[in-house]
Length: 547
Image 1 (tube, rainbow, N blue to C red):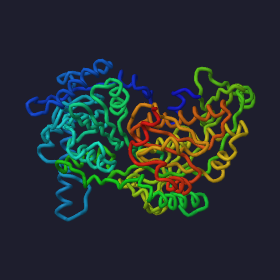
Image 2: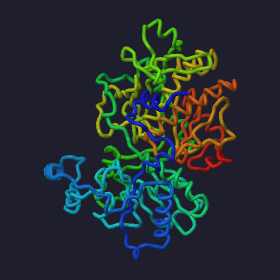
Image 3: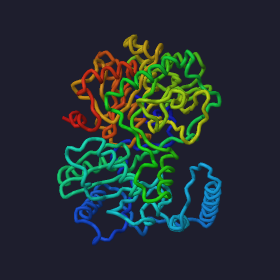
């Protein structure tokens, strides 16, 4: 319905985003970390060679390891030395005076690595074959922890069986991530490979059948679109706090509280993980892990959010808009700014229309909190999207600090909210789907995400599924947000042409989870509790969508 450039602008995404697996493969740069074959099993070595050959077939840029390095300037080395020295001095002072601190002491081995002048260039991801020694992990050689992913190939874990449940995979994956300081783990045996990333999914693929296709659509997108949590600098942070008890927020807060309680018995929200509890080799690596997660103290999977009542915007014909505002609509783009407000052009069978982008606000749980047993006074954050800019607001009585982070899926949450507002504006134009437009305009709408999928036979009436064929990207990636809003708008337009009633959408993120918009979390929780087979944690129902 809209160009990708328009979607990127309205979501506040900077730069062109690769959204197909083929585009991602073409732009991907990888290098293979040296290994000693005598220390590894035949399965790990043969898979590494098989993967390298497949990357070359898919036109991935495989960089020889010796050519993957850049030389760091003396200025950066000296600055890093003084920062580390200052950190260690403050750490020791705080320890002497028994002051609670979030700092970590940087040991000599880590200091040598930090001051090393030759580092792997930004934008080149590293494939590690087997286990490497402390202070000589691929992470120790990278320039950027966020722009160079590490992928580690290991033997199949002894504790993982065909029948292993989500929680066993979850625990295994998190400890492997921490021990190997890696973004992705590939566990292999003679016939199959298992893919772990921070989505907590655990797809298993054959080494013989469809190997090239699975590498292209499952592995490459996870490397090209890695997890990148939002920082405070990504938002316009509002000074004035919001009040969870005022009339504007009271309904949303009540539904978040009561709805999350309904979800306690669904088993769709597993206990989170604290960074401090993971199996890191030492405190320095633990510190690096927290930096990669934007200094979050832990991770929890899934989210609950509530879109506050949202005003729809009228569609104005291009001809009328031009005359009324004495404004020439640009022909080369399907979006434009007027008086600081962002507009999008909507091309419908009835003609070309202009729509001012609706302003949306959402209450969401902060990252890392207990999703089904949270404290509304401490665990809520208010997110906004206006004219392509993200806003952040804290509840009254709290200051934003390192433990108060927005969800990893913030951009996806706002993409759904913005898509809902655009859908409601279109529905109002066509004088249809009054139930949906009234809900979003008067009471707002609940948005939920968990790491499982709906049984295809249990889809709520009037809801439509999209996203099944999208590449398997990580949570928090800009691709996830684009898939969310684009899929929602496309599926709604399809209901227009097929004259079907629209109540909402179910956005599937393959090997990540499900997003759904529902009238309330309480109603959604009751619906899921009514039949345990409606949805379960893990991948059980995902393959049914491909049949």
